[in-house]
Image (spheres, helix red, strand yellow):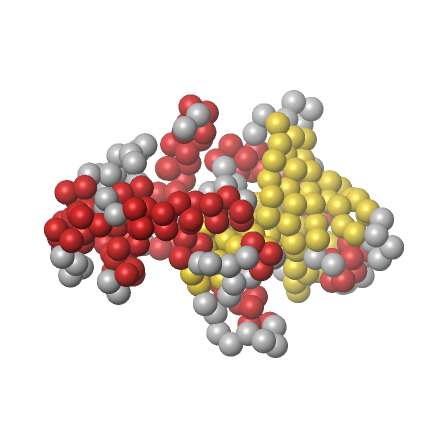
Length: 303
């Protein structure tokens, strides 16, 4: 693992722990970093074959993330297997079985075909790919999306490692911002937003924006070109720079009913305190809308 990649993962851990506690009520107490987790994955294939895949997965996940166990230790894994009803000796023998090891290799190859760059990675309804540790809002939004299609009957969520799907079925994904990217976005910068006109040309405007969880929000005129473009085609990109650094975000956007609190938060973010009230009073009767941008890709320089 490249040192810079390892450093980025370690830097994100406090953010992950804070989100897990605040939004899910889980206290993270993770095991050692940089261990070999392949035996745990091989063991998962054996557990699945015995009908205990889900209980094994939960036991291993809890042991590492909440009990600080080393899941690279074969004896630790065997103890966990026994706890969920698997034969301990049979489990240890399965860890050297080439059939289960080959199944893990197939999962790794599948992940590469999907272009996965982070974990966890979850496929919803064999269509939407969600990567990274996301806030509750993200999961609610993704689980609601398939219900808007005529063919949907409920929501099915599966870990990518347990799927056998063609990569072409995955139409959308979600990227999780790194702590450095999040810190840059929380600074006060203007953003250039690009949407697609009906003729395929690009329409660009400068906006005030707000980072909320793992999404970007801003306001627009309800009858503006931006709003019309996004209602027709939700494709959107956003760029921020400060002469030394830049960050480019792309994804899809949803035009929502006007949220006056969002407009106030934006005014308080970008204006001096004494100007907020006066600015909020401007064009109070003008029809407005709010935009929520879901992030699919993020790249930049210096962030």
